[in-house]
Image 1 (cartoon, rainbow, N blue to C red):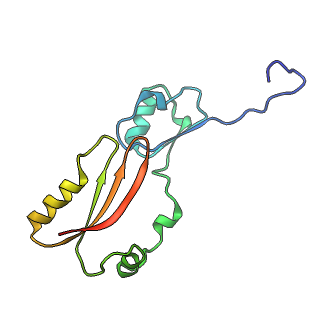
Image 2 (cartoon, one colour; image 1 turned 90 degrees about the horizontal axis):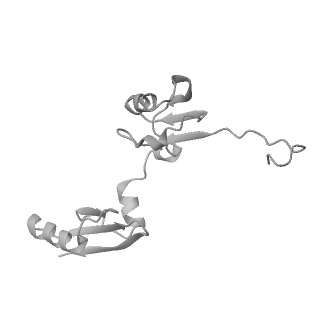
Image 3 (cartoon, rainbow, N blue to C red; image 1 turned 135 degrees about the vertical axis):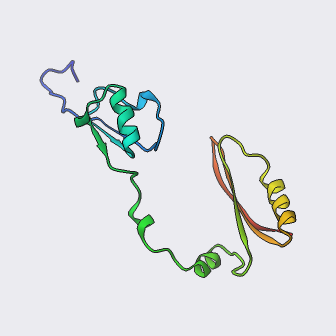
Length: 139
């Protein structure tokens, strides 16, 4: 755009939204940012340590979808939608991007330790894909 003096480029505001609650990498805090939205006062202090001034920082908490604030459906209805047994105990296992081990082996060990059948909801998350595994029971 600078090559075309007859076509002035509009200035686009530059904002950053930092959702980390505690320690953040310094690259989140660019000194030319118009506004840096942070979740906590601790992160706001880090932003100032890394060169931002108070007029650039807005501490607003975590941005969340408004639906998360609505009352949830009754547990019975949610279990029915997911095809779950409404009377069974349920364990949710989540494996993160760093790798947490073999979810199936962990589920079997939990079932053996508890002494009763568990309903298992397995969620596997990797750096490259997110997959919701089948709902299953562990004897």
